[in-house]
Image (cartoon, rainbow, N blue to C red; front, side, top):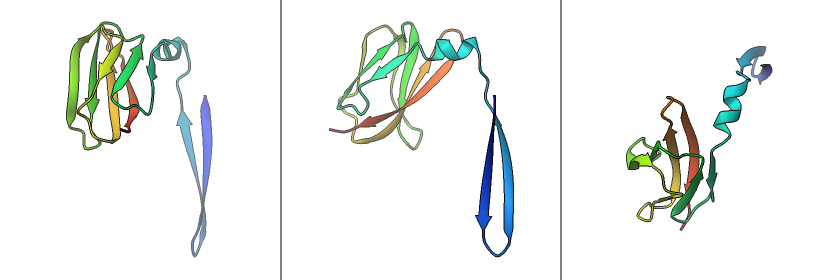
Length: 107
């Protein structure tokens, strides 16, 4: 699938830019959707469905590792000591697939 984006810039001269974005569509997309993360925003416990036997990590906005579980088999990922903010949840499957989701913490 190709998505065309046209950007107009209104300065002293009119310029038109065209950007072609290519998205892969296929079976791999369905397997990525099998994982479910909720609630978001969270107050300290994240439930992750479809992430058995994966590595789960939480990163701060600056990229610092906040918490990590090497072999995740529990239904929930507890982050009680994390302050309010937006974090990146990274799930690494054994087949090499990496799924990242933004997590908002509000206490």
